[in-house]
Length: 321
Image 1 (cartoon, rainbow, N blue to C red):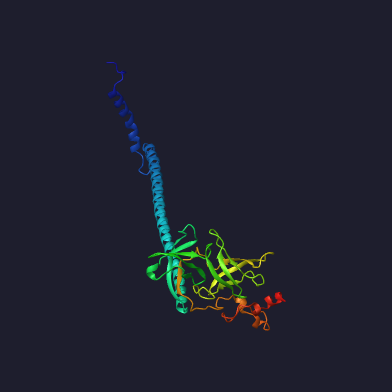
Image 2 (cartoon, helix red, strand yellow):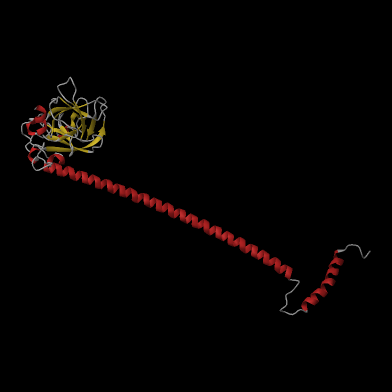
């Protein structure tokens, strides 16, 4: 057999023979000296260990940050939910406070008046196509009848139009068919308050004599002649006054003191002819005189039952002179 032919055993033997001197030299080195044969393996192990440590630290940091983000998101959602719940409770409490104040006002009004009243809540609006109406939760079983006055603590709203057993339709004073006896509180000028049209929220004071003193801002109150509404109760405020050339009466536009579309509770007047509000709702400007000399000549009439002649006010006298 040729010695130089490739043989695995021979190759291993040659490797061992060559390695013995190197091992012998390495064993003769001092313990404190580094093993040059182990340096490549040590360097490789250090690189691998450093790489693994960096990768492990990065994974741990990313995982921790992800978990923190999840916790922060959950905490934020919890805070948002709690805030929404508290906000809803606060709004509910505010609504209850407003309702409580409103009901206290209704109770105080009912206790202080001489009228016989029945309280009701508004449960519907404009259910009758031909009229401006609202629906209340009281009916004939509660003693309601057609034609009874419906008011709020602030002014006239309308009157019962169509009573049913458990509910009733209230025709608003803004309806084109609604009429209320009215008086200009400052000068006691008489007229009839009527609604303008089906789709309008304004009124007009008709049949007022051309010579009467009616000004923008005057308060129009009930006259009490129909024995339905109490006398002297607010109805509307004068918005504009126009004197037509060929007319014996003034054209007076009014704005109702009560917004019918914001009313929630009302009173039905079962008997109102015993009440006379007089000048209780007189504007403050009319109650105070500009000077001490003219204090007794203020337009506000202290006695509501006094004769409605313009002699009680200086301005109409000057115009007639």
